[in-house]
Structure formats: structure tokens, C-alpha cells
Image 1: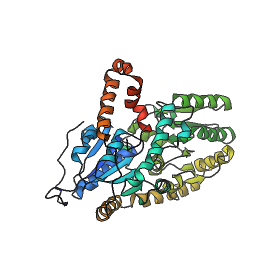
Image 2: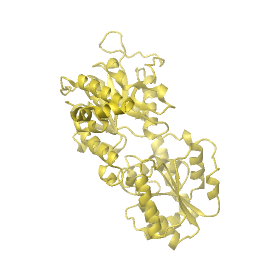
Image 3: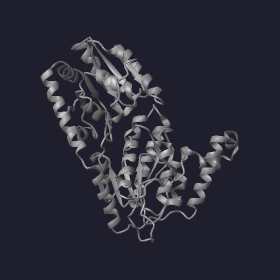
Image 4: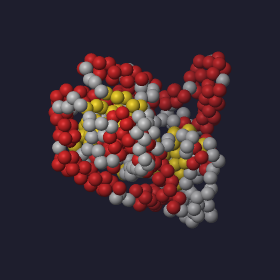
Length: 432
């Protein structure tokens, strides 16, 4: 983890603490590379630094390709100050979240949504538990935040329903630079023929309802076009049980030409988008849905189920369905794949929606939210348990033993070992 970097632009804004600049830092559990949250976090930092704010990114972990842009979350207390604003990206409970709760900085929470845990029953017990406790933990922040932002109107409404008194939307403006490079057809070239290619891009996880995409494809192939295939692009790591269920479904309904392609490089992803005739999405829970915008950008007609944030994200582009009947959707796929006039109309609606999205003033919206918090009355910080920092230090020590000395960890008294177990942290309230 890098040391605190001070290489940003001049920061003229001053606080009431002498000559020190006001800082607007960010904190989150993990900074990924190339994903929607990672793009947003880095974009926020660029806007804040350009506006003159000191701004660092505090994380528990980071992809090696962006690790040098981050600071270890345990350094956050040293950088903290009551005049600062802390942008807390909340997606699941973490130690970084607990430190963010306890420090005196004013807080803006950005909610990236947590998948309802019921989707993971019988598929991923650990993630089921994490999502359950993460959704429960979200409520603790209603009294802690000066402002809570969703990255979609759907997420904002969830915040409002969870009791946050001040909410807003900080829109996701997807970046498409990862799709600008040359296509790699080394693997995708096997599908470059006169067959119709249906495409889905995203993680192979239950809320995406890959089984419904397969049913749609099977009906399309059986009743409309036997010379067609389904390309499923996305990682299934950790969800091998779900993948096995999907293979069982394929065998049971007699589907053919369904290809699970796993995680691919950006260059390979470009190739699959270029080969796609129709993008299909049956997901029942999306906080935003970046691959939908990628398909818009790559001029692939989109047919998607109208659930969660999907209608707002598509914003009048593509085709939305409210009924998952396979034969009905199969007919729509056939028209979208073969009717050139319809294709042109669909692409036109998608281009218009993408233009509206990209025209949003992300930087200006962010800075208005920050200035609004600075100029609003300070909320009283909720009480934190007197031994919070001692307990946090103990939890870190136990976690270090668990990771680096597992035998010694297993030898600890059961009650003590459970206190420090990472999986049990979600059971604790912020008050200790």
C-alpha cells in the first residue's frame, strides 16, 4: 500500500483550522481495476483535486494495477479532521466502514447497492451472510451521514426507504476507454460466421437470472432460428454451484450452442461485442447495469427485463420487456436480429439515451453536493463505544494471526477467536 501521496495540484481552499486545506477523502473496502465503482472513485478524485481539494483514496485492498493510487485504510484516523468530508462508498460491511463511522469527519455516503441475500440461498452461503449483514448495517449510517447518494435513482430510493433524511443521485457516467482498443479474435473468431450471436456480459451470479436468458435463447433457437448461439461472457469464480445448476438446466431443456466464456480481456470483450447481433439481459437486480451502456456504445440492440434500475439506466433506449415468456421474447429477438429497419430504430434510441447520459455534469453535480454539505449545519456525530479503537486493534491483531499463523489462531479460546473472525464482524453494531 502506498504512503500518502501529496503530488496533486495546488489546493487553495481553506478551513477554519489555520492554513490547512479542507480535505475530501474517499474510503471503500476494495478498489478494483476497470469496474464501474473503480472508474467512479478515480473520477471523483480527479474532480476534487482539480477543484483544489486534498483527496486520497483509503482502502482495505486494491487490485495491483491501481494499488499505488490508494492509502491503507488504517491511516485514515491520522488524516481525519472534523472539518474534512469523507465520501464513503458503501457496498458491503467492512473494517474500513467501521473506521469511517467512528472518525469525526462529516460523511457523504455513496451507495452502490447490495444484492438481496435471498438470491444466494443454496449457492453461496458466505456471500448470503455478507449481503444480509451489509444490508442491515446500512441502516446504522442514517444518523451518521450529512448526505447519502445513490449512483442511480433506484439506489436513492432504497436509501430513502432505509431512513436517510437527505438523499440525492450522483450519476454513473461509464467510461468506454477499455473498449477503444483493437479487438482480439483469437477465441472469438470461432463465432465469426453467418450464425446469429446472442450476447450477455456480466458475472454469472443468480440475480442476473442467466437461466432466463438461456430459456429465451432456447425458444429463439427452437422456434425461430436454429443457426444461432448464446455467448455468456463473465466470471463465474466462486459461483461454481450456480454454474452447475445452469448446466443441468441446459441438459434438461435440450439447449445447444450455449457457451460460457468466463472472464475475458478488454480486447476480447471488444471482439464479442462486435460479433453480437443482440444483447439480452434478464437480470432482476441491478443497481445500475454498466454492460447495458457498453452494448449501447458498441451499437448492439439490447433486449432487457424491466427490473430494478434497468429501465432508468436504459432511459428509453433498446427494448424493455415486462414478461419473461420465452416464446414472446424469442420473437422479439428474431425481429431485432433480422429486421434492419427495426435495428436502426433501436440503435437510434440507444444512441440518444447514451448522449443524455454522457451530457450529465458529473463533476458539477459532485461539487455542488460537496459544497452543500460544507454549507449545511453539522449533524451531531452518533456515540461510538468508549473501547472502539481498542476493539479494532484487537480485531486487526486476530486477523493477522488468522492469516499468517492459522494453527495459532485455531488454538485460541473459541470465544476469543470468534470475536476476531472476519465473518463475524458483520454481527457487531458500530457502537461496539
